[in-house]
Image (tube, rainbow over all chains, first blue to last red; front, side, top):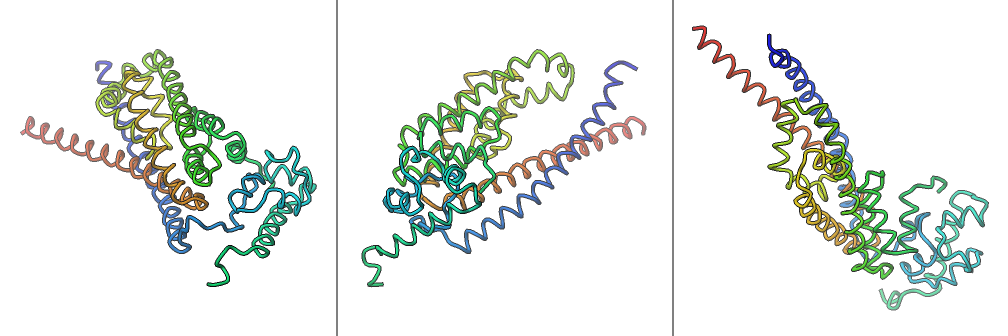
Length: 133
Length: 209
């Protein structure tokens, strides 16, 4: 038996394992991501996508106050004032960081405060034409 | 809100420092650091629409970051070539894989930049390790990364504040595509093996009969 003859069965076994591995892994990924993709697709269909929507529930811990001010059309100074945080040195900090610095890390405290500030501003100054709808 | 993640750090960085933070995020992602590159591209598009980030500068620095990271992966694969050749060089399977990559590698490089993104980093290593020409790698890489930035950056721009919902679907769909490719490859090997066995049996029975 030559060395290449000895390699034959080993190669065959290796290919067999690779084939089974690829099929099993492929099926697992198809099942897992197929379900998730279908779910996220249905969620998008159900909720609908409105590019101009500025829902306060979309505010996240990584956002900064200047970003939220721009995205929601609320003055930066107003948000800082309402949440009781000085604007100096805090403009580049995320809400998560501000939460740790000024709210003793109390979970969701700053998110609740920022959302309330924006809702308050929107209630005080409804967008032009809103009362005619 | 207590679970601080690297993704959040880079998203805040993009808001504060703009395109350089975006370029750095894509560079690290291309190097294999587990960062969601597609999410950053979608976010950059959305931030561009909101006037937070300069889209031209973000596209330029993002492309440079992603291509540099991919090239670094290629170089790592290139320097591991000697070890790979010693370990697997005699294997017919490896030689076949090398030949296949030489012929169809361009398509693999292009598609893994924006469609099959979970396998982009291994593709860079294989390209370097299989001796695929660097300039060919670079041209397909730049084309693929450019498509990625335009396609997903455009989606982020179109969907604005709702880019997170789109990102979830794209990420799941990309995983599904990788699953389909792996399953297809396994099926191809299985059918090829059966066909080889059938031919061998026919040959054997003809010789015996």
